[in-house]
Image (cartoon, rainbow, N blue to C red):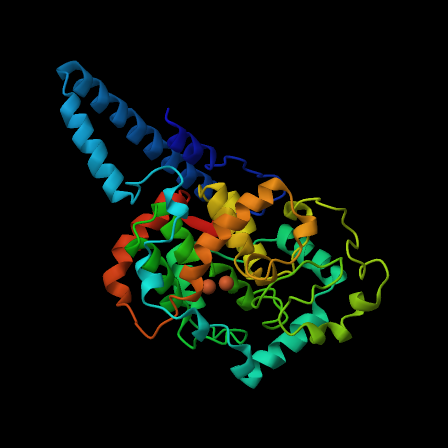
Length: 357
Ligand SMILES: [Fe+2]
Ligand SMILES: [Fe+2]
């Protein structure tokens, strides 16, 4: 079994818990499990078919055919480049047509953006963050396909964003299309499409937008002056708590960002969902987790918490960021035209089809 398919099969979990369920829930659970079994069967069949086909080709000695097929596949996957070449944005079509000074101009931001950050900086505390993670882990909010989730998300206007008033699906497609146009790998395109999908949280467990959107930052240690609207932290109770208001607070030097609690919102939420339910590579998961951590990836803050692994992640997130930020234009794609391409892409990285949000 090849490595990719092995990953897919592992994602098909068969852990029924039938105890203490009433009859309607029991039937629903059995139905879920039958569907999982069917998906597993399909994956195994495809794997067997692939093996048979390869054996036949080997017998015919058609090396040339294989080479051509491989080349086609590489072109399709946007991976006609070296292993690490996807990190190079120097030939980006997007970057050639953009003036970075036109983005994140908070001095010109609407009052709604300032009001948003005052609330976010006041309420993102350690206590809140611990509770938010408990809430996340103890229930499933909804079940639907990634595409249906994108459509649902379209009703949200992000109050923290100074750069765009386009809908969320427009932003998702603009980001993904910019990545695709630059011939980046398919997993990278998928990250572009879903990186903001965690904003769905707004429709379920949020207390407003302050615990869903906006730049992120560590809680449990001193708030860096490099965080946007830093003065707004004055009313945050953690800012006066000696446990949390020192340079390291509850952390230790170079403890690693994976051990740091970043303010709760769509990044953390989607990172945790994608880690469990997708086959996206670690680089893609880091892009999702850190994409709003501007004080870190843009301003260079919190170096004293980083490890070597975080240095590598920083480059990865910086590769992603221009597509998130600079693709915010007034170009609107025709959703229905792009839908078939992205449905296939989603299926590739979310093998269970229905995601638990
Ligand atoms: Fe985002
Ligand atoms: Fe975004």
